[in-house]
Each structure stands twice: as structure tokens, then as C-alpha cells.
Image (cartoon, rainbow, N blue to C red; front, top):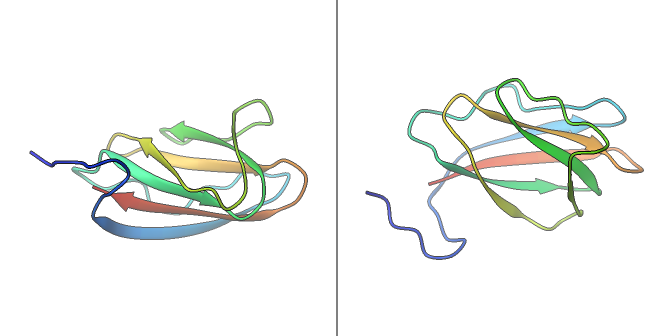
Length: 95
């Protein structure tokens, strides 16, 4: 059993994707045994988590440079779309 203390976790694979008015996700999905990821966007964005997700302008708002930890299941991914300007989505496995 993995113990978590707040937002502390063992960081694993980290991937980037560039988003604009077109949503983007990292190429690889969350690996086996991973239950949460750290998500960071470089500009204000909307994000969605799921199997083959495509973020839309009504999804969860994530401000720029404010990392967020999100619960996921293996095989899921994160998608981001810009609020007003394009940026980079970084997704890091954090179990």
C-alpha cells in the first residue's frame, strides 16, 4: 500500500503536450499502478481526464503555473485546451 502525505508523491514518467485552441494530450497514457498525476499548464487552460479525453472550453479550469494533483486510473490521460493563449501541458506520474 502506498502512503501519501499531502501532495507528496514519488514522481515517475513526465510528458508534455502543446495545446492551443485545439486540445492536446501527451502521447502515452498513465501507466499500470498509477493512481494520480501532477498536472501543470504554462497558460490558463481547461483540462479533462479520462480515456482518450478531449478538453473543451467548459471543462475544469486550471490557472497557469499552479500544479494540481489529480486522481487517475491506469490507461487514462489528461487533455488541455487554452483559455486565451496556447501553452504546454505537463503530466507527471506521482505515486
